[in-house]
Amino acid sequence: MISIGEVKAQLQAACENELPAFVTQYEGDSRSGVQKCVEAARKRMESLAKERQRTEKLWEYERSYGSYSYICGIDEAGRGPLAGPVVAGAVILPKDCDLLYINDSKQLSEKKREELYTKIMECALCCGIGYASPQRIDEINILQATYEAMREAVGKLNPRPDLLLNDAVTIPQVSIRQVPIIKGDAKSISIGAASIVAKVTRDRLMVQYDEVYPAYGFAANKGYGAQMHIEALKKYGPCPIHRKTFITHFCEV
Image (tube, rainbow, N blue to C red; front, side, top):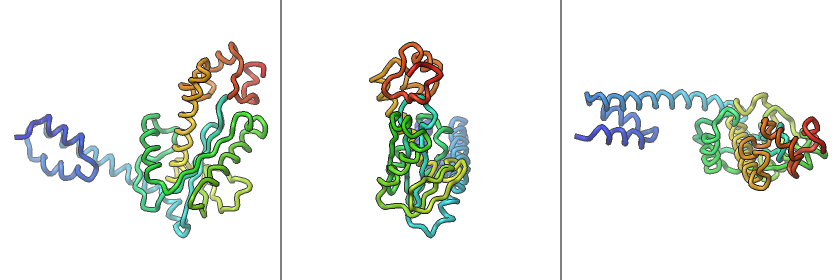
């Protein structure tokens, strides 16, 4: 007879479509340890079913514009920090894409964002990333810099999108049809994917900057106004990636 430890290992290794067979195979085994595994499998199946329902709703905008061939979701990361660039992500997903757990990147843990970033990159038709530097943000303001980063991200896409789903904004100087969606990163799977790509890309960049400018804690705070970051600004002054127009309350620039 198979041991309970082996049953647990089977459950741990089982993918989504293997769970019903696992339950069928072991639900008649009276051992309490096995029954706990069966119950855990049923809970996983229930949780996955709920997630599939939630994800299906995220496709509503994409389905409603189904006549378009290449629908692109766009979002940004880093409008609020005191340091570092603003980063825009643009993602075109295939219409038969099977992605679960996509959401507003701010609602996900760092570990989950990293996992989903890999899956998005594997299944997307194409992804584009755009950047606006701290210097550019100071020069033209954060909103206009965000638009520039978004235009850059869209410009890198191949195939070229014929519809843009944007998180709340309408991007100037773009000839492609745009649909701004309030809180779009939690309502559209394409925008949610773009939000994750932008956030992970920017976070990784800030970790690299932390090695160059270690005094400010960029690896932890990602350039946002955490107390330790503000104290470092007051003590050391700004570094080259600080946004001068954002830090006037904390130090001389």
